[in-house]
Image 1 (cartoon, rainbow, N blue to C red):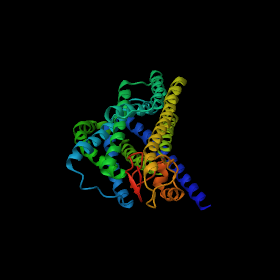
Image 2: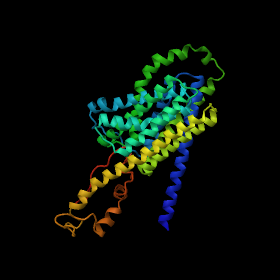
Image 3: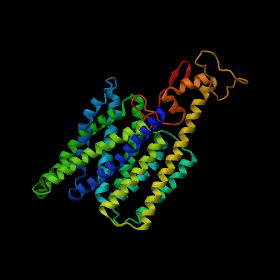
Image 4: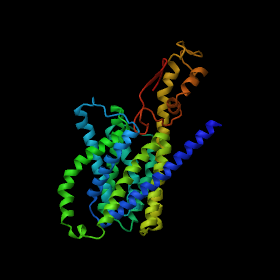
Length: 391
């Protein structure tokens, strides 16, 4: 009974967080579009967001008692990994704002559905990772949907398309190298969010000072406009919403499996597209809607194919140890036939292993929140349990 109540409470918490995530993300995009419609300075909007993440993260890091930055990280690693990651964050943010400035939010997010395509290609080129046939096939409806949406977009703009693609590629690179960074440094993901935002702010601020600032200063109509207070208020709201959606996203990642998070993320994109269409009422054709739907459906297929592939890899990693290692009593598990141990753990061993939520989630293909990280951002290290090694 107590277990059922706990499960119900956890489910209610996840649903509530997802709804909050959809609302905050949609609001963030809608407010961003409102700002850029009257204030065509995407670099400034990105700067405000980076300031917001840096400032708002400080109390979160203290209240949640997030581990401090490891001072042993060498300077060379900062220069070769963390600084380029921060620069990628700058480029991704500015490109994303240019895209929603030039094209409707609904179209920009349809183009961003190509994220799996970039992840697959970049993982192949950079990490030499190969995918299953199902993963490659799932990219077909994504590409087809984006092509249809592009050909039928009534407010098409080439700068907006290229900016959306650039932002998507940068986010894909950030996804790949953030996982690598978390694994190599053991840094908490919220600490990494703060570090990257702070470095990105230091990179963007001088560029902004020489690019956007002179134009804003000379724009007398903007400085003396009666809407200036409204603009400042919208910038503050946009910055807070951007920080909030990052924080809620990381919290959801820590609570659900990779597949559940991926489905929730695809649903979030549907919510953003729907809210933007209802808010701005930009004209769309039925064929355009079909293209958007096909692209989102392709993302769901990709997520399922990727989940199946990762689960198969986990089984391959776990089975050799299950077949050959000693049991928790220090003896050898019985039932061996010509040196082969059947894939059945002793009852005592199984119960002890499943008492640890990390191993339980690991065996079931889930994503346990362990050591301040989640499997969606970092691979788990090998853990030893009384002679039995679980990868």
